[in-house]
Amino acid sequence: MTGGGARKMLAALVPAGSVGPRLRPGLRMARLHLASRRVSAALAAVAACAVALRVALHWHWDAYGALQLPLIFETACAAAIAVTTASPFGEPERATGRWLPILRLGAVLALAAAAAGALAAAGTGAHLAGGTLEVLRNTAGLTGIGLLCAAMLGGALAWTGPTVYLMIAVYALYTQWHGPALTTPWIWPARPSDDTGAALCAGLVFGAGTVLITMRGARDSVART
Image (cartoon, rainbow, N blue to C red):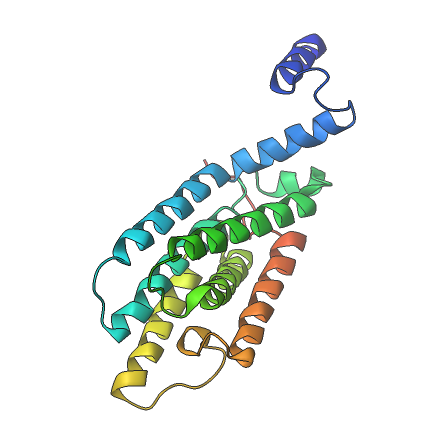
């Protein structure tokens, strides 16, 4: 593509006069980053989870089922966020993307906030087990697990971390009614919403995952075709 053609394409993407000349390349870079990570698909998945949770909350659930229900949708949202860390460009992007850490951080924080907000809003006016605080804690912690898994196994396999943790958490919830309860705060879904230790553990996992994925990205060394 010639230089004139590139300028015309950029002008079509960002209308003249809407932003300063220095901001246009940055906005275009952010848009391309979000598109390459399929962030729009992740947002659609988050919205679908929120709608499904809202519908399911109108049904009758026993105490065990009521605790499991939001956890399932929190896990689905965390998995959707984690897989967006996969890079379709691999190592060349890491070598040339000076603003890549900022873009990674912004995308992760925006998606996590959207997921927590959507699920909390879905429970407004309904009987949401654990309430908003538990939604925020569980979503953050599960997202952190997904980010850590992306850094170690790659974005395409990042969903496995939250999924495995879901099975552990479901068992921990089960033991509250049918056996000796697991009291460790590292299994935070089984702890009350006001448990400080559980909140700290979830926050630490989210923080560690966010830092690692911001600085290193997902373990995708080659472009996937």
